[in-house]
Each structure stands twice: as C-alpha cells, then as structure tokens.
Length: 262
Length: 318
Image 1 (cartoon, rainbow over the protein chains, first blue to last red):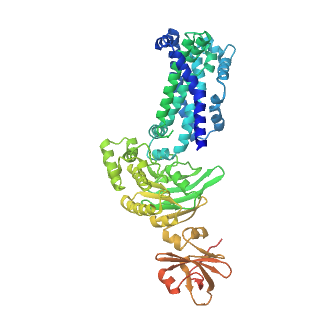
Image 2 (image 1 turned 90 degrees about the vertical axis):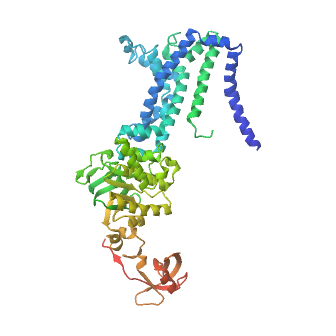
Image 3 (image 1 turned 45 degrees about the vertical axis):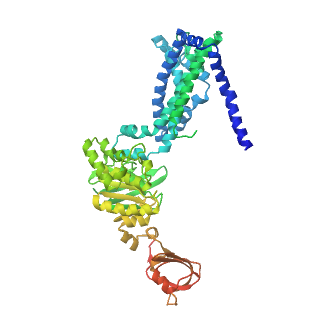
C-alpha cells in the first residue's frame, strides 16, 4: 500500500518539478503583467515573421517526411534488398545525433568550399536561406513516421494485401484501399511527432540559418535572440506560443490513440 | 478450369520447398493437398495463385501458361488460414471489393454481393465489421469474397485450421455442398487427413516438397504407394517391415495358429468405435480398432490377455 503511494507520488513529483513547474513558470512570467504586454510582444513584425517561417518550414518538411516515411517503412518491412539492415540503422541516426552536428554537416556540404558549395554561385542559395533550414528540419525529423509505421505494417502482415491482389487489385489500389487505411493512425501519430520536432528544432537550424533577424529566424531562434537581448517579455511570450503548439500537438496525439487506456 | 503443374521447383535459400512437382487437377474437382507442415503444400498453392514465383516449371490454367502472370490477372479466388479479412471494411464491402476493383456496374455489384451473402448465410450481418464476427463467419465471408469475382479456380489455404473442432466439421460439410452447387475447380490445403478424406474427391499427398501419391481417398487408404502415405492417411501398426491398420488386427481370447500374445494396456471408448492399446511380450506396442460389439464380446479391459493377428498387411519395397 505504502509502496504504491510512494511510487505514485514519486512519479508525479518527478513530472511536477522537472516538467510542469518550469513550463508553468514561463506561462506565469509571460502573463504576470496581464495579457496586453504578452500580446504586443508576439505581434511584432519580427515575431510574426519568425512564427510564419516556422510554420512554413514545417509545412514543407512534414509532408516530405510523411511520404518518404511511408515509402521507406514499406520498403523496410515488405521488401528484401541489400543494405536493408544498414538503412534501418541509418533511419535512427537523427534521433541519436546531436542536431548541432547535423547543422555542421550541412554547413560543410553546402558551405563555401563544400562539395555542393558551388550551388550558391548558380543562384541556388542553400545555406543561410530557407532551403538549408528546410533540409536541416527534414533531416532531424525524419525517423518519426518510419518508426511509427514499421511496427504496424509488421503486425498487419501481408495476408490482406495478398487477398486484395488475388481479387484483381493493382499494387496501387492495394496500397490505397488496404495498406493505407490499416496504417492511417500510425501515419497520423508519426505526423504529429514530426510536426512537434520540426517546429521546436533549434540546434541544426541555428547553424544553417545564419540567424538573420526577420529573414532566417524561426520561432525558437527568435526566443533565443530575444533572451540574449534582455527582452525577456518577448522571449517568454514567444515561448508560450511554442508551448501552446506543443500542447495542441500532445492533445492531437491523444486523439490519434483512442484505443489505449492511458 | 483444370490446373496443371509442370515440374515446378521452388527454393527458399537452401530449403527446397517444392522439388520438381508435377500434378494435374481435373476441371470441376475438389482436390486436397495433404501433407505435414513444412511439406510444401501451401507453397504449391501459392505458386498456383501467383503469390510466389517458381524457380522453374510452369503453371497452366486450362491451356494457358500463366507462370509469368501476376496473381491479379490469374482469375483465382483465394481463402487464407487466418481469413485475411479487410478489417476496416464491413462484410458487404469485403465481398464487394473484387467487383469494385473490376469496376462492375453498381447494380450488378449489389445483386451479386447480396446473392453471395445469402449463399454463405451471412445476409443478416452485411453491415458488421470482421471483428464482430466469429471465426466461422469470417471464413464464410472470405469464401464469399473469393467467389464474388467468379474465379476460374478456388484455392483454400488451410481454411479451417484456425477454427474449433465443431465449427470445422460444420464448415467442411458446408464446403462440400457448396462445391456441389458451384462446381468451381477447388484446391484445399490441409494437414488433416480426416479433413482431406471427408471433403476431397482427389487427394495429392505431399511430403518434403515431393508428390508421394495422387488418388481418391479410398485408393490412398487401401493401396498406399509407400510407407509415408500408409502412415499419414490413417493410424498404422508396424512390425518389422510390415504395416497394417488397427482395424485389420484380429483379437481373440484363444491361441490360434500363429497369433501372438498381447496384453491390453488401455481401452478407449469413442461411442461406436473402441480403441485398444496392446503390448506384446517383446515390448512391441500395437493399436487395435474394434466395434462396440466386438469389444463387448471379448469383455475387453485393462490387463486382459488376448491373441492378436493382422488379417491384412502390407510391405513396401524400399
């Protein structure tokens, strides 16, 4: 009995002090002087641009990773090809690698003197511009859809797909009518996780963006720059926007997991 | 449409699943592929369906060589052991799937699906999802789905394997009647010799990727081609190199000529049939099958000494 309560309070206390109190404090400091200053802080042109840029990057990176993630998951589960084990391991790389390293890698590749550094001379500016930020975001948010879809594909097996095939369905029809409906919740969940990761990304984007105010500054970068410039109100208010997006993301995740009891 | 399998070989890595298999399935027949698990019988069915490519050999449907055709072009209906129900579709949508894929007119689809649901006795459950059906109902739905597209051949891969004994028996009888009505060339894969004998008109016995024997249930039982078939299609006693059925063992209470002495170890009453497990002096175990009357006449019970003699036996050339 005591052990049960100790466990509960232990777990709750851990959550409270490590997660809820710090995030709660951000909310408190933001609205400490009422709604007005907070609203003004997040509606400056610089803040709005950062928000818009963050959403734009997510709007490109998330669909790209969704399509690629589903295709890759199907390849990994349904097909045998040389190097399959390697691909399987590489998919997890972004989870293990520090985002700063990802940023540096892209910097080396596209920067002056990099293998693809010459692209900038042909009018294709990758580094310190939107394309580089999108590439970095795609890189770091790549594993989520794959990792959500793979176990579900394994679990449903190939029986239904083969039944559809014997009934005359083409591979595409089978995918659209049988496979996709079966993995749709896993895809949704993967999309939610990808979105959360894409919107919150700091390290990799920080390096490849060059952090040009009002041009290549995403919301997390904006928070950092305001904080460094002692505009704590701006930093806190933008943080609240990020936190709210995160909370909605978590709620969406709950929505997509209707079957589980927790 | 008849099915001809010509010298088909299929390997999975080092494992030879099918070793130069040739077999002819007559048009309109109900044929069982019978064999132990891992014998290659399911692989053969999947090669016929087009779900596996053979390493060599040909598959003919009627006179057409379909070896290079994908499964969707072969016009086969397939039923899987674990139903392969489309879980996100209702019973009605499941059965309609093949017709919708073929873009048949709506009125035709409605008519055909309703007809089939009636045939498989699921007409009241058309709006249910597979998860809301029993195993037997799911498998009937899978059959209706396979039949919806008017397949040239119907392939059943251990269709009753996941069902309990009573439902299995019901569905076997039902499949037999269905085949009498529909007459589509049907192959059923099973590892259960009783099921094969009960349902099929022709049985192909497969072992280790090879065809051991092809024949009617009676031919297999009465004149098995080899040891494997003999012991696979029914219970068997073996003394040295001779084999005989438990039914062909005569029991008597008196020593008579060359009969040998044995003691009753166990008696099992199965209604009409009585099974006795016997052990001879030399430790050889024997199984006997008697009728209720025969057992009563002998007053068969544990510990009784009887004299046994097979009245029919077979030896196989090695």
